[in-house]
Every structure is written in structure tokens, then in C-alpha cells.
Amino acid sequence: MTDEPPAPPADRRRTLTRRALVAGGGLAALSAVAAVAGCTTTPRPAPPTAVATATPTAGAGDPAAPAVTASGGPPIDPVTYAPDDALAGFYALRDQVRERRLTIGVLGDSITEGQGATTLQHAYPAQLRDRLRGAYPSGARGGLDYVASRHQITVPADQGFAFTGTPAAGGRHGWGRRVVALTEAGGPGTYAARMTSARVCWWAPGLDAAITVQVDDGAPETVRADVGGSLTWTSPQLESAEHAITVAWAGGKPELEGAWLFDGDEDRGIHVIEGGNSGSQLWQLSERARPDGVSTWIRSAPRFELDLWMPEHLINDVVVRTPEQVRSDAAVLIELIRTTSEAPILFTPPYERTTLPIRGTTWADYIGALKDAASADPRADVFEIGAYIPRMVGEGASDPYGWMGPDNHPNDRGYARFAEVLAAKLQASPA
Image (spheres, rainbow, N blue to C red):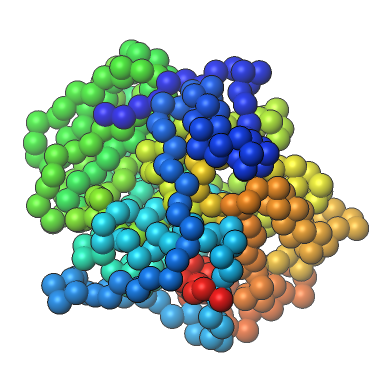
């Protein structure tokens, strides 16, 4: 089991500035920050400088590449990058997927969660994962990656774990900030999928918290908290087939975050960890942005050992936050991420709203605010998905390719366009 102790009070936290990262020794400075922030996981070393290597090709015994959905949109020109690109280290790791995991963490709102898709596997994080797995084969079939205990969205219906009772939402922590409070009344929650192993992610507010975990029809195993915070239980290795993971309350006030599912790719391959939350805005990710923000979710991130962070926010932020506030919110998020990770951060704002509620603001103002915040960190950048998608929301909106569903969210083909655009960026070649 891996775990992290509770975070200290806000006045004891430190943030990592560009000066500390560049002039203060990089990993050494970051490790000191992580220790103060209450993270026991040592940050993954900084990615190597990008070098041109041969793109991995499928071997004779490799599983077939995942099927992908076409958006029907115009082709996307190839993307290139310079040696000093913020994502250069990430690009250098792509060709090692047969030897190591390459893991991308996606933060965002209902678009990230997949509101309006026919299944969660048609949300853009899953579609992006499948495109990248086809481009960079690892030799493994690959699992579904992170499955949340529940979702904030209303459509599709196949969301998270199925509970025998009525589950109650827990606190605003965990990856995606959407945990389920495990109780006797709520009953056990089950998720079934093809896998070779699972890592159950749960939250213990105190040492009296305990859960049981059952694989298929096996005997339930009682797991007790030996430390407070975000904890992980790892299953035995299983035959590649459909298995059911069942998690239930066993004491205290435990909360279920979700499960990371593998299918032969425990130590290799492309992984995309979806962490959306319907309605989410950047300020909600830290109390340093606003007093009612919550940053405890960051303590669930080290288990994933992310190689790239991709926040998708902005379409909700512009409703209530000024460009200057968004700049500050993004800067605070970068500093929070830097308490646990040196990996690149790529802000990926979605399609533009045609009308903005705050008088005198423009979408370009908000994009500029994100770029300004990212410019303070040598491994942060902004890539605008909306540059490849029409303005599909608001007065005068246009949807020439049929990418929008009936509820002001993309449909499967719209999410396919997100995946196409992001895959082009993440498959960039040296200039």
C-alpha cells in the first residue's frame, strides 16, 4: 500500500517558483517543497532533453491497435517543436513506452468528464489515450486507466462504480474531486472490466478508516488505514479477462476515489488519467486562489507519477473570473503542481464562447492570461484546442461538422476532434 499523510496548515506550505526550479537545483528544491507539503512520494526526476529517436512500431505479437472515432473535420497540419519547448522532456519519453509507463493527467470540467458522450470511453481523454496507444504501441493491450467512483455529469449513464445502495458524495478531494463516502447504508460498490490488475484509490480521514476489497468471488480483504490521506490498495496479478472489483465500508469514514485498471500495462504503455469535474474552474483547485477552493486533491496525484499535466479549464472560468483572476488562478495551480511534480504542464483551453458575461473582456484576453501564467515556468505552456474547433457555444455559434450534442456539450465525434487535435500536439516532431 502506498500512502500520503495529511497536508500541513496552509501557512506552512511552500510553493515552487521558477527561480527555485531553475536556480535552486531543480529536483532538490522540489523534494524539499514536497516534504513540507506533506507528500511522501519523491517526485519523478525531470524528463530528459528531447532527442530524435525511432518511433516504436507494432511487433508481430502485439495486440491490434485500438479502434478510433473519426471527427470528420479538416486535417490537422503536423506539429513541430524546438529543443527548448516546454514539452521537450515529454516528447523524449514517448519512444520508451515498451519499457516504462507514459502517463498523462487531465484536469478539467464536464467536457473532460465526457458530458454528452454515448459512453465514458468516448470522452476525449479515453479517445486521446487510444490514439496515442496506436501511435506508440507498447506490446500490451492496455487497461481502461482511471475509473472514478462517481461522476458529476448526467450523461452518459455508465458512470463509475455501481453501488447496492444510494451512494453519497464525499469531500472535495481525490483525483477529480468526486469521491463517494463509503457507508453501510450505501453498500458495496462494484466495477467490472477487462484487467490484469487494479489499484483501488481511497481516502482515509483518520486511522479508524477501513474498507474491504473483493476481486470476483474471492474472499474480501480488509484494508485499514495506517496513515491518513490518499491511500492505494493493489490487487494480485490476474489473468487478462473481465474481473469485478468490489469495495465496501469496514470502519470509520473512508471514501472511495476510484480505481486504476491495467491490462498488461502495469509498467509500460500510454496512460491517460481523467480528472474532470462538471462546472470546475481553476480557482476551485486551491484555497490560495480563493478561500473556498480546495487543494487536498493534489495528494492523490503522486501515485500516478505523471509525465504530463493537461488542465482543460477556461470555458466556465470566463463566466465569473476576470482575465487577471484567471492568470492568478493558473499561476497558483502551477505552484501547487510543482509541490509534487516536475513534469510539463500544458493548459488546453477548449472551444471559445461567442459571448462573455463580463463586460469588456475577450476570449483572447483569457488566453493571454493563461500564457502569461505559463511563461513564468520553463515547463508550462498553452495549447488552444479551440483554434481547431468553431465557436460552438453562445449567440452566433457555429457547428458545421456536427460536433455538438443537444446539451451544449460535444458528442462522440466532437470529442474525437478534441482527441485528434491533442494527439497532433503530443505526436509533434522536432522542427
